[in-house]
Image (cartoon, rainbow, N blue to C red; front, side, top):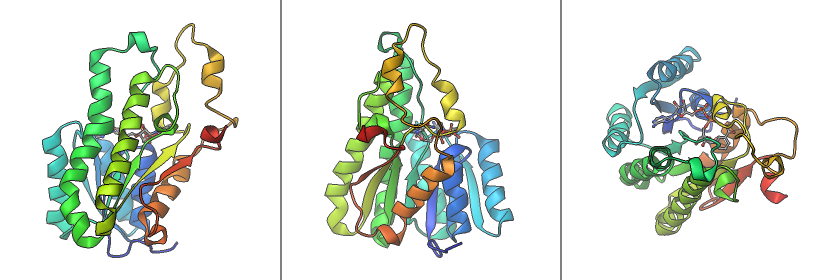
Length: 251
Ligand SMILES: NC(=O)c1ccc[n+]([C@@H]2O[C@H](COP(=O)([O-])OP(=O)(O)OC[C@H]3O[C@@H](n4cnc5c(N)ncnc54)[C@H](O)[C@@H]3O)[C@@H](O)[C@H]2O)c1
């Protein structure tokens, strides 16, 4: 295994499960010290333990990234533990498949709190540290950040907002030596998919266009791209929206 992240410090949200867990594990294996953050405390402790068991260094933090104060506390925790921050991976997300007219104010607000406000406040808190160490941010958006998707109006709007945040930050700070990118997965085999059951009376042809392949990506397929984008190998990649979706947005 390469050691692309020797001496680097990472904060990964959503690290209890799926892509965030796979990212934290890979960064840990490749030499990063990783603050694993998630609202699922037991899950995130298990991820941090797995990194330590493999010979790496990690801490676990239970946090709700929908709360700005908890976002700031996460960045403070990484900086206090290890003296800085090189990589912020905003992987945690919230979503589901709901007809637009049935979406409630509560789920709309939660979608934006987790998918947009969390990454925004984490980025604000991380920025001085990333600027100090020429670090970078990888946001996990979605194909829903790049195209319209039926029965996902709130989720699609929130992921487009995250894509907009990525691009705006990339322009505002690109000259100062830091990079901000978004990885945009398609369907990936994680527990997240359980929230995406097809609504009654849905037009199946509208949903069918979201997959070209019979299978889903593995969380490691997405983690591989997140790690590449976060690494020095991607030194000239900034403000990019990188699909890992088996070709869905190309169709
Ligand atoms: N799985 C897919 O098909 C798919 C496709 C495109 C994009 N995505 C995006 O990928 C990202 C990762 O999802 P995944 O598939 O690995 O799902 P997952 O359910 O396996 O992991 C998501 C993690 O985020 C955590 N989380 C949720 N709300 C949180 C909060 N408020 N504070 C802290 N942690 C919170 C959950 O506890 C969970 O551990 C999400 O942003 C999701 O929108 C997923």
